[in-house]
Every structure is written in structure tokens, then in C-alpha cells.
Image 1 (spheres, rainbow, N blue to C red):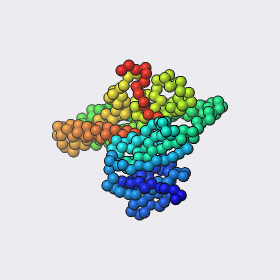
Image 2: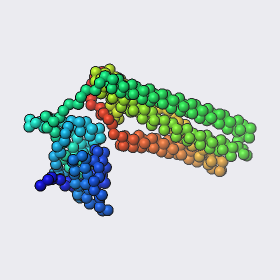
Image 3: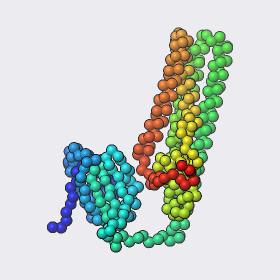
Image 4: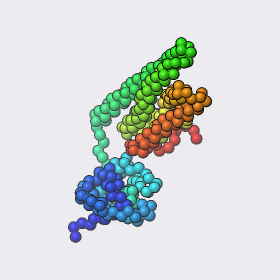
Length: 350
């Protein structure tokens, strides 16, 4: 006998392929057209999976043991990838040194398979410390990237504030123009068509401005998360600076929220006071005015015009707000943090 290969069960072979590919495994056997079998490998390790859609990940008892050269190094690599999922039980445990001479950790995949990973303590050789020159070069690269992110963030904020100012100026000028046209025409004749044209133009410019504002809001969060990730690398270089940073060193969602507000947790005030909410409210009002103007010009009563305009404005505001919330949630569902928030910062009281 030369070797033994475990055959584990998988509830979804494409999902299993994606999970293990992220962990550095490669597909060593082309799957059948019906996705019934899968062969994955990394180095000398080879795992086989048989498709079984009836598998319950939370009740699975499948497991195997993987002997590796350095369990701690492999754990540090995989811990940045495996995200705990309570619906499937997928998770990774911290490494521990056992009484029987092994350093071990465990990984549970999305089908409930338990992989115990271990290396003999005598073989787990600590890494050679890097030279001061290598650390200095890395710090310089990180600092350059940090300044680049700060510059890009400042440029984006300046540009979008200018566009908001231009749009609000156009809205103000447009409403004044409509008022002057109303006085000149006694609100009769071609006044209705002119008012609709002006309001439609404002609505178009407003939607273009709002698109940019929402994009920059997402980009601002992106820059904050990226700078949190860089601070995490600073802490790796010198752990003593961890308690000096007020901004978070974790690039997960709680870390992002901490960076936006160092000393206290803000709630809805961050959203309600944002430029995105301002532009959503203004655009909703403009769209409501367009709808009301169309109803009034078409001969509808003022009651109908006010009612339809109000409804359109509210629906537009709700739709814009819902879309912004969806993009926020979708971003955090896809992003894999490098470091997660461990606990409350020491400078805050319970």
C-alpha cells in the first residue's frame, strides 16, 4: 500500500471547489458533467469529494487528518480566508499545542467536513526574523500606499462636493426661473410646458449627480477599509503601536465603523447627515415636482397634482435609499477582511 486518500461528501461540488480553491487547492480531476465527483490537491495532499445533495452540514460526521510542515503558518494563511458561517458550521479554530507533540487546528468546510490539520512540534520551525532593511522597505511601501489612498480620497470628496454645489445652484436658479416665467405668463399658455422642461432638466442632472455621490460614498468606505488594512500591516511590523491608533486596525465592518467615529458609536446620524441623503431628498423633491407639473399641465386638479407628486417623491426616496443599502450589504458579503475586530478598544469604558 502506497497511500490512502479520503473521500468526503459534498452537498454542492461547485461550492466545494470554490471553497478549497480559495485555500490554495487545485482541481486535479475534471469533474463529471453531472458534478458527481471532484479531486482536489495542494502539494502532497489530495482530497476526493463525492456529491451528495442530501448532506446536512450541521450534522455531518465526515473528517480527515492532514499532516503538514507548519500548522501555524498554514493557519495564518487560511484564517484570512475562512469566514464563519452559522448556517453551514463553516469555521476555523485557533492552533493549539497538544500534549502528544502536535500543533493542531481544525477547519470545517461548507458541507460540514472536518479537516484536522497538524504538524509535529519538532518540525514547526519558527520563521527567521526579517532584517531591519527589509522591514524599513516594507514600511516605506505601506506609507506610500497610505498617502496615495489619502490623496485619492481627498480628490474624490472635493470633486463630489463641487458637483453637489453646482446641482443645488441649478435647482435654485431653475425654481427662480419658473417663478419669473409664471409672473410673465400669468401661469397660463406655454408656462406649463416650460416648467416641465426646466424641472425635467433638473431631474436629469440630479440623477447624474446622485449617481456620482453614491459612488463616492462607496469609494470613501473603500478607502477607509483599505487604510484600516494598512494599519493592520503597521501593527504586524511593530505590535507596540496597536494601542496608539485611535482608528481601527481591523478591516472588517466593525473596524470601518470605529474609524468613522473613534470615541463613540454613531447610529442613524451618520446616514441622515450624509451628502448622499441630502442629494436623495433634493432629487425626490424635484421628481415629485415633475410629476405634479405634468398632472397640472394635463388638466388635473391641484389635489391630484400634489398627491401624485408627493407619492412619486416618496417612492423615489425609498427606492434610492434601498439601493444604497443593498450596495452596502452586498459589498460586505463579498469582502474577506485581513484582520477582524477582537474586542472593544481599551480607551472606551463599558
